[in-house]
Amino acid sequence: MTAPHAHVRSLSTGVSALALTPVPCKAPPEGADASLGAAGRPEESSPHHGPRPLPSGRRKSPWGIEGREASMQEQKLAALRFQSAARDLEHIVRDIATRYIAQGVPLTWRLLHAIEAEALADLGFASRHDALMLSLFQRPADMAYPETDDVVNFGQSNALPAAFGFAVAVYEEAQCDAHERRSSKHETAGGARARRETAWGG
Image (cartoon, rainbow, N blue to C red; front, side, top):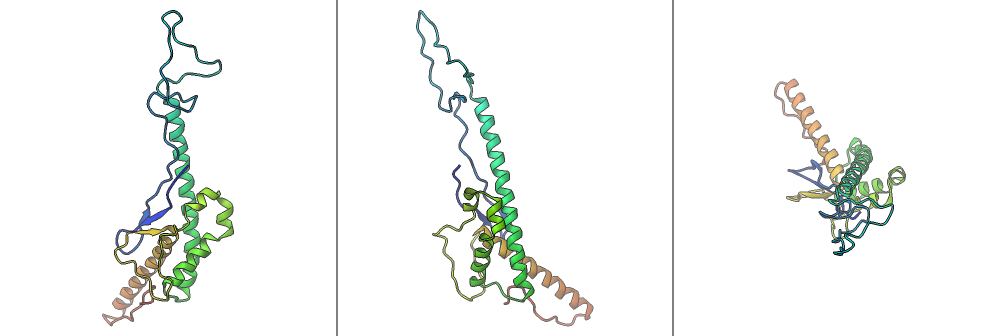
C-alpha cells in the first residue's frame, strides 16, 4: 500500500477534519482474472481443439468481480486502521496540549514542534500501529515551519501536518472556552469590560 503523508485541512483559523484516506492497491481492471492477479488474456483457441482449459485448482473469474470485492474490502480495512490511528494520535496530542494550556503557556512555533515530537515518540502509539501506518503521520521534510518563540500563525494555509493540526484545534477550543467565560463574566458584571484572555497567549 502506498499512500501520501497524512494532513489535516483547516477551513478558517483551525482544523476541521482529516483529509486523507489511505488507498491500497487498485482493483483489477475490467476483465482481469482475479485468481491470477494479472490482466486477463484472450484465451488461445484452435479450430480443432477449442479453448485451452484452465489449470486445475484455479477458478475463472471472467469479469474480475471477486478481485474487485477483495480490493474494496482491503480499502475499507485500511481506512478503518488509518482512522483508528488518527484518533489515537489526536488523544495523545490533546493530553499534551492540555497540559501546556493549564500552565498558561502560549502556542509558539517552538512549542508546536515539541508537542509533535512528543506525540509521535509516544511508546503506546508506536506499539499499537505498524511502521507503515506510523509513517503516514510523519511530517514530510519539505514541510518546514519556523522554530521560534513567536506565537503560531498559519495565515491562509489550509493544510497542516496531522499533529500540528490536532494541537492547533485543542488551543482553539480553549480559546473559544475563554471567550465564553469572558462573555459570562461580562453579563454577570452588568456590562463591565472583562479582562482579555486567550489560550494563544496574544
